[in-house]
Image (tube, rainbow, N blue to C red; front, side, top):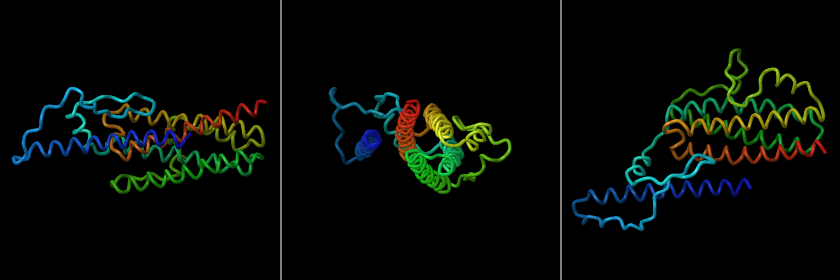
Length: 232
């Protein structure tokens, strides 16, 4: 399921970039004095479609809008998103670190390992993205500092304390509920970024947010199923 969702997003993104390239080439030729004027666009010319935010419909745009979007670079909103998502992912690592000593279920340990590896990889990617653009790279333990602002979905100090003291079935339930809350917050952060002017419009940030939505929504669905199994 994760692979299917990712492939859908990547196909959409690829179509997006190909169309932009076609527009740029067309504009370049039209400015060449040695090139004959292009014929008028036929009424049945395929529409230019801009992919929407995850879960949102795509939008038909004009050639001028498409050419303009092809030059979009990262925004301040993109930088803030990357910095805050590092904090967000870091807490998920705090949570998964508790699993080996607090849960007795192999399925829980496999889930925690999967989350740990994916979040570590994404933190490394976000750090490199910020470094390459000369932006501040927050420490992975910054969310532990007094007065640190919690990102959407992050567990409070009281919730983390309760989780760290739980064992067995109670821990499993609290972990699943907490991680569902946590992942849901990541989806909210993506939605909020998309709502900002120019947010996630550069190809690399768009692809990353698409991956977050695909992976974390799939994990939310899996954890909900595990909670249902716990109730039986």
